[in-house]
Image (tube, rainbow, N blue to C red; front, top):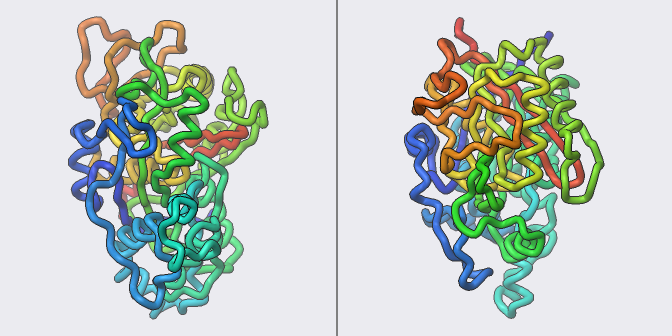
Length: 397
């Protein structure tokens, strides 16, 4: 069985603009950077996980790709640029691929053009077309291997890991830059608002008082290769329940199938999973079906949390971002806490939400596992596209 490792990480989200800063906020359960107010919904009190740091300008020779999404991509790929450069020298540029996930790409640039701005610099193919993201990353890093952009809504960058692994397994590549980038735009915000899916305030996954999601933006990239590292990509599985265009199957059949598939792919049992990063959007239907699926496949023992109250739902980037959170958890031996109002919905199957604090009435132990070896991440999307990833710690490394 071939092993594939996650060697390097570039990361930015509402929690910060590099892995170390983000780890500090992640394990502290910091929600302070989730801000209310957005230019697209005047008077809306819901929180958004926008990146507040200034984003770098694209170099002159790549200005035709200029948009907020690619500027965010540049911020995170610069964090792994030196490592990719070393691989390019040792493997050859044609042996390194790029697989990126996104659901918005540069749509904000198209919105600006429709609003009368950016006419001279607008380039649909480079800025807004989904394929432009992987093309930009490959050109900036001077890579000549396959370049693929995956767009399956909120499971996009989780599914990107499956595509990256296939390139390695088929000996098409020796290494792959894999991840996702998504930025906020009017179409996304107004679309979720039209679906009545946005929270009026702070999202509360699995609470009896949950009222919807907070949106956010993020970029996360890894280098995946056969080169041994501390964290291994152990299992990947996708499923499609095709129940409804925007609603999940109420019993979570597709979600359960992807989790079972990831366990089988990793040759693990449910009891081996030490932490689960929940999709946990805070919507009525998603939380209900995910609680059902998790309890069915993993039971009520595994410590789990949704990190979306800290970052917002970053859509096409969520799979890679939350895989990065699992990577940080394994590297640091700590769990991200679940932040909500503490009123677990009694209508849901009981999950072991890791809050970091055990209240007197807690029905289950909320302490972290003795040893954190395997972490799973769930990503579930519109149209019934589901993907589960399992990362494992290489203790002997």
